[in-house]
Image 1 (tube, helix red, strand yellow):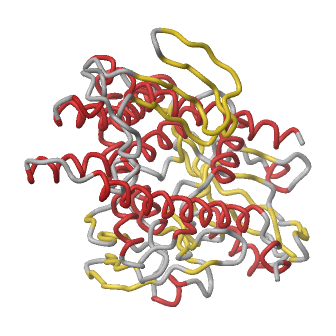
Image 2: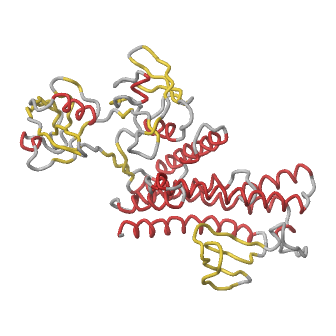
Image 3: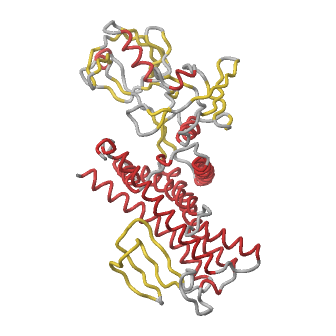
Length: 445
């Protein structure tokens, strides 16, 4: 129950700020150009509370999944008087600025928040911004079937040259219905591969089964377990077991499983010096599977605190990268190369917000907020009527035609778009439920 309340409260904060910033963009631009704003609402539906000032009703409405600014004479379905403070009475370029101001504010917020995160405390796995060298390949995974081996370096994926691990993970995340084109370097040879992501049953997302190469640094020791008793210390870096080089923690786990209950010689680095320690694994049982363990965990993290100029530059680069990723996902959805199941709805956002809120500090939640704000800004620029991008598209078309599109045509466009968005939202929420309650699909008729 506590986790549910944390997730709900976190989602309310995140979405509330996103919507407030977005609608304030429209509101501020409209006020600047002298357009009368009748309603500024957080949420849709029935008015719950609020106040009226300067001719505007500032309200909180019953359905919290969005918000809107209602400008005088904005909708093609309402009657217009031709008053100078109506939306349609203003030049197209002013209406264009008003439409783009909402998504623009979301994008600006993403840049500002991420800049602050990079300046204060940006914690991430050490491998994330490193060259994509494979540390381990899961047995019977798509990567294993394609012949990928530990030590291979991914030099191209889906057209992107020399990706980092973050690039690789993002590219795989937006590919579901088709193979991923990959080039890997093995020694002096470059091999071309096609790898089809698959769902492994333990996760709701597709995977290819490769794991990053990363230092196996001891970040936690379990008391009364072999590693602690043998003298391993926090900060030690495991480099080999019985002389076999280890490239990731999973390679150690796999080796111990094959080795059984025989003692192992662990080669490690401590303060730059190489040491050899003999450890006797113990047998444990996890989810009905027998494993052999030494009793240490490795999750090496890197913490960045950048000066303002570097933080801003990195924020701009990250937001550009994620913007291109969002556009790429939309393109693949249209081409049926990606699945709508990869999109998160309110339940998914609540889950992610709750997970971020439970992590130490505020920066994980702020980082998530920046990504959601960027998503909201980019997706609202899509040329779909009712969305800001649809309004912008119609304004561009009218500018090229040098005349207004007829009210009747606009009515039909908006009605069709409204039905489309309702159906789209229903599908996303349904997929949200399927991911949150995996057994629900089997119980439905």
